[in-house]
Image 1 (cartoon, rainbow, N blue to C red):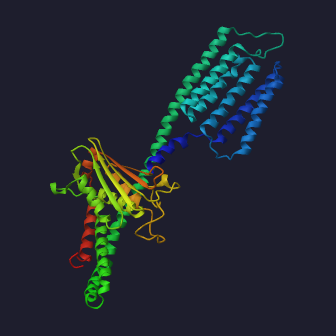
Image 2 (image 1 turned 90 degrees about the horizontal axis):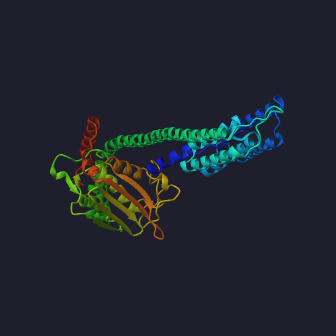
Length: 466
């Protein structure tokens, strides 16, 4: 589902790859090793070099363990990434304690873990890491080993100076953290918007292709349907005299041929609303009866309820809405064990239709992908008798996209345990539903639809002939 996919974009974009932290830590280890060796051997400053290398070696061992335990593409959970950054703060604190505290020029490296967290982790974890950094800097302001310097010369920085450095670190961490978080959020929002736009365009492209296929199907299937209708009519005449037992089967065949004709009529006019006169207006009750009536003959009890203030929504008939709702109701009837419940709710702001069945429900493996093209929803089908290849996984996709064109939001879920079944909720802003009938296609698309209807009318006999 689109809504679920959109929700995942930001979280996936925020997660840190472990390889990123490993590379940054190797750079830090190399820099710390170089600075330690130069300070001790070149400048010959005396400080606890052994303890310093223990801290550096600990980071090297942690890095090696992470490299062996994970792949290069492994992404860390937010908590795991925060723990690794907290370790970096503590490791740097240990080195600074041995080499002068906040008076050491390398104290500015405290800002690095906070900035990485601001870019990649949630705000709460960034604040916690900032508090840890401030606590470490506070301790190093008053407790530390002397800054390495020339032998016989004691380098002492007054408390006021060290407090100034502490203040600079805190303000810099706050400013850089806020700035990095703001820039990162804006970039992430843009990336999410682009990804969502690409998904919507892909869905519209699929549906546009299906619009053309529908027109082609109406044109190509018109001739065989006409032939079926004519042959059925002749067989009905013969069966009345020679094989009365076949009469019911032939009547069913004629009925299904007429049904195919009506389906093709719908397919070539999905994007066009029936507007032009007050006779085209319908209430929500009329819409639901039109959608439900063709599915009452399949042995499933369809319970229809309506609740809302007296002013029931009224709008022009929209074939896209009729087809989309009809497809959802047909799916519910197909997979229900014995009952389908349809509830219509409305207020001054919203119109909601809930369709529930008591069947097996949606598979958890594909629940988040329902509504994508070529994803088949459930394992049984009353009409197709479980025939292999009977479904292409396009029904819910077409229904969802057509309803979303009218301003609706479609969500799918399973009913709460211990009951079983599927639940589809369609929600419109009332104003959007009442003006959705004003949507129209381009002139070229309308001409294609009118031409396809003419072909169907010319190639298919009327219902009277059948």
